[in-house]
Length: 191
Image (cartoon, rainbow, N blue to C red; front, side, top):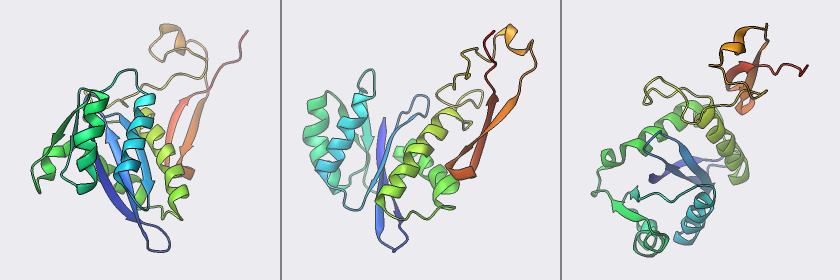
């Protein structure tokens, strides 16, 4: 996994810091939260919150040389059994996966929505994480599929041969207030 901060501004012009943690394997966005005042304690708590949702801890965490991350690298991650990997000074390309995600976040959300405050941005980040992981196609994955396969509403997988026998209705789902959309088959009533 990799973690890094991205900055944006709220409606009043104050700087918001967004912590993003992304899995290298399938490009799954594991965690994304914002704060006005990032501290080592806040980052450590976000790591604990993220790890509660995982089945197993990552082997390593790639991060830059930000001074906030020094206690995380020296104490928090080793105590969690995760090996910290610090990239070289002023070499963001060594953490390319999360840097590419920052571009996607900027292009698909932050360019179009001005957050009102920290709470508003965190609500947007939770919804964007769901969209990014389940509905948005990823070219880094072989068939441009989302990293987490979305489940059909009635439990029938889309590759099941019986899936297309009955006429079905295609339903559009709006993400982030209609900024993005995805489509899925509507659930059929049970006989």
